[in-house]
Length: 216
Image (tube, rainbow, N blue to C red; front, side):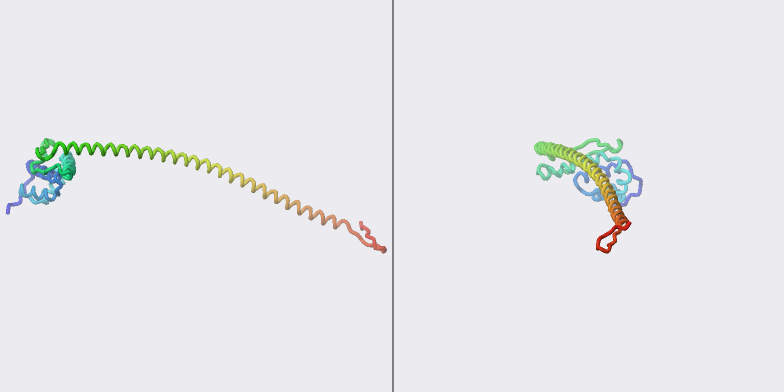
């Protein structure tokens, strides 16, 4: 069993870790498998390789990671189309001296066919055009809905003002009606009192011949 190294990481160790991890990302493998392969190459544990990648090396290779993920998506698509044969020599070469910048990209000569690439690009162009049409249609519908909402808001404001005016008119009429009822009730009471006063003032008596005679 090979001895497990405990010494500090060198620039070569970091470079090996980056290249193998990027290859696993590009090929759709897991980082754990990459760390195990790196560990076998440089006599370190997979856990040590994973810790080194996440704590130090990964941040220096953001651009290379993005490119590897894009290549993985492209390879998966072309593989489904039957136009790619995965080659072990396909890899991304990185240089540690320039903060993990991509130095070069080597793709096997038999990996891609020109027809597949053209078909892939045409399909994406058609997809982009279709998405652009959908975006324009959605923008048009959004403008129409905004205009509809604005019209409904204006109608709602107008109806609210009319309702407020009607409520005010109703209150005025109701107050006038109550005042009229009070006046009529007071007039009725005055009329009754007046009749009673007249009855009290005018009195009659019957004389011996049966005739009524007013009593002053």
